[in-house]
Image (cartoon, rainbow, N blue to C red; front, side, top):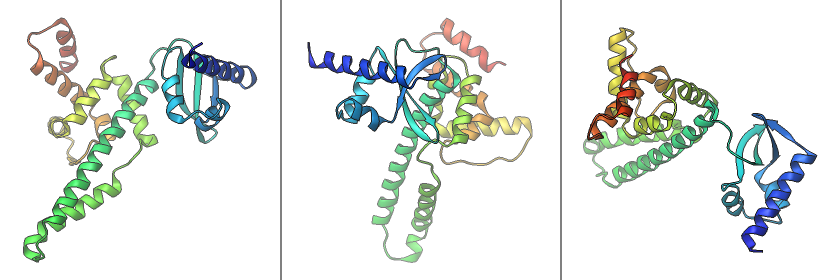
Length: 242
């Protein structure tokens, strides 16, 4: 038997044992639950990377959930369950984290570049100093992880946006945040609500407040790239005519 097959059999055995001795029910399925480190220890000292690689393949289903105040890994064999707003939101959350990581790296590069161009002359350096101060503030307030409130916004967007397009809609917004903000301003003016604000980076609460603007941005982006008006584009276009 190949090493890979032995590893899979061992993993199946560990999952079955945990399901039998300490079953955890969630979304209509019975799971094996433990921390990543606990699973790796039970598997004979596997590395985290090996554990992730093997549990990312069929027939294994892996999820992460906060149980009793700490993050636990859930494992089972079988087919993926139906997509829920929460499961789509988890994918969207990973996109948000990667987006923020890129933003953070870009800010650090900009700050370091500005610092290298300082001349020591106050009149010349004034604008650069203001921007560096602004960057330091942004780095301080830009979350690293998705907050609970933000995840709630993502769940709401997953329910509101066209099914099957939620991930791509968020990708479009994150790729062109300035365009979304322009659409948001139009929406505010049209509603006559006032309260216009500018957000330098994507805000989930703002997107949640203007979900239709995100859909319109996505559809217009698809229309610009299309060679012809396909049935899919006709169907999507109906969402921005509501």
